[in-house]
Amino acid sequence: MIRDLIFPYPYIIEKMDEYYKPNLPSVKIREDYRTNKSPQKRPSKKKLTILIATFWDYPHIGGLSNYITELSKGLRKQGHKVDVISPNLFPSATVKNLREDITPKLKEFFLRRYGSYDKKILSNSRLLYVYERMLQKIDLEKYDIFHAQDIFTANILGRFNANYNKPLFFTPHGMFTFKRLKFNLMEKGSIEETYYKELERKAIEFASQLIILSDSFRDSLTELGAKHEKMTTVITGINYPEKYYKKKLGPQEKLVITCVARLGPRKGHNYLLSALSNIRQYTNNVEVLIVGDGEMRETLEKQVHSLDLSIVNFLGSRDDVPYILSKTDIFVLPTINDSLPIAIIEAMHSRTAIISTNCGGIPEIVKHGKTGIVVEPGDTEELAQALRFFIVNKQARDKASTNAFNFAKTHLTTDGMIRKIESIYNKF
Image 1 (spheres, one colour):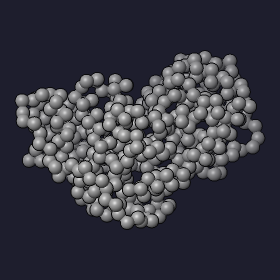
Image 2 (cartoon, rainbow, N blue to C red; image 1 turned 180 degrees about the horizontal axis):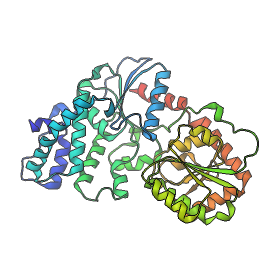
Image 3 (cartoon, one colour; image 1 turned 180 degrees about the vertical axis):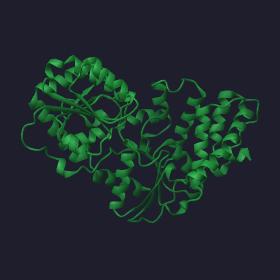
Image 4 (cartoon, rainbow, N blue to C red; image 1 turned 90 degrees about the vertical axis):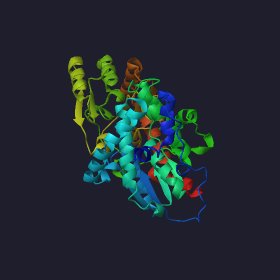
């Protein structure tokens, strides 16, 4: 029984066997879970039935949730039928029963085979199992398109798709293993690296096409086996409220600098605060708004107090970000690790001068010296210079904000994003 529960993913067990080298027979891959067939060419349809799958709760706060919202709304606006499947939609009592049933069986499998188990792999294997069992209750045949939003749903749908042979698209919102190695959340050469890297590699293999958020993904995905012709870049677009396109007329009492981001260690707020303390002679008429909440809030508030930065105000989580941005002169996102933050796209639509970092796809939309200023992540001095430049130079600030707005209106709208994704769907 345990064999049947685990072996939908024999390729994972094979990689774990290579790592642990147990004295056991090699795993026989079950052919019913593999397919090398191309998706069948079906008669073209004007309206599609699309399944968008995410391994994370939806909706929630963050870029992934915003992307799914814009994608699903945009597709529905074009007349397509769209369902979003996420774990929080599963009945909690059923999930609890499945979790309690599978956990000891997974432990037993790993202990018998390897003599130990990794807690993160155990937890993830359990989540995969529960998601699969819930997906079995859904009529997947009715969908024309599967669109996975992470490596986990790409693996789950990829396995199911051996039976359905539907076009399966995969949009990675970050390089899962690389990011965790970079920030010491995973040890180099560990069983966790082996496990998650194989999930990433297999997600790429299962996909009919990778729809990527920026060209910055290409090198990392290529290292995992993706072919360039299998990747199509579609930069995220949003529907921005038109009433916030133009700022209210009349002078403001103070120049407003805003940062919109979750208060987490990778968003770089500490560098922004240090940079502000280095240019305090230029900030007499400046107000700084920190929008968002998270585990770093108390630490950052202490930093503000220690640096005596009375100009900084923590607003917490807000549902009126467009209004706040309409009052903003300079938008700053000092992130040290990101893909393509929605907050920057919102700031560009709000006609605001942008300062951000050379991370992920940010330089693809924040063109240094044209639509904003790009600094190296974690470089406090360079960030301070960029802040000082925009604070004292209104002409440069206005030019950058206008360029950012024009770029956003041309390249960063939901309608434009949907047209491109529709064309990719229709090719398959």
